Length: 17
Image (cartoon, helix red, strand yellow):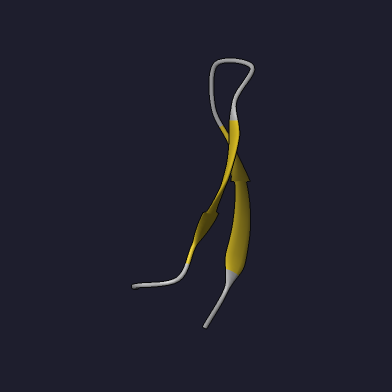
């Protein structure tokens, strides 16, 4: 599972939930 999220000007790939 890989979701694309965006935080305070930072992008990271979430592959746990």
